[in-house]
Length: 246
Image (cartoon, one colour):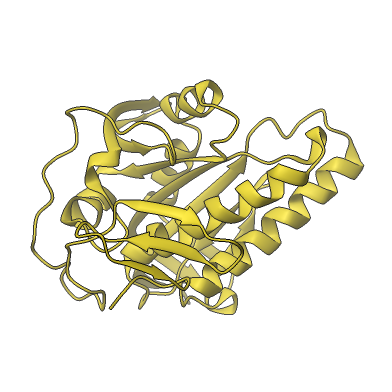
């Protein structure tokens, strides 16, 4: 067997209500999705070529490189994705507007010439199709371009620590039951009101074996006149760059 077992961060995205738009609109939204993800990955310091990418038809699955800190899949990747989708939707005609469900997980997967396999990919698929994420995005204002659902494992190792750009209080715990899979997960809707109660208090410990900065920041993310993203720390400092302050 030529496959090797590696721990990898995992991401999957699915376009909400992609069916019935016609081929011209479908090709356009797929093009926008690819470009947007490539740009967001670049801002996150993750090379598209270093990822294993699988086409899901109306979405994509991304197996990130082993060295990539899981926190980067939320900040800046997910946040950059939201900014770019929001900018696209402001000028796009109805059939080419995009809203995404995004799922994040991590675990040991088998990588070989034939592709990627393993139980964590099954978990990722269940999270992507989870009813709580579908219902939350469907019920959110149209100005909310994406939902984010992370596994309990991803939350415990990344979200709860409150790394720069990640606010644990903006996540709420939900129950996911899809086919044979049943577990807790954590839902985030960017731009929606923060949930009350449900998110665990952020831990100040640093994620082991990850090359990110320690916790202590970020409550606000906004687009700033085409110059990047505004990262506002809890003490009021701002940085307009496309990178959080050092």
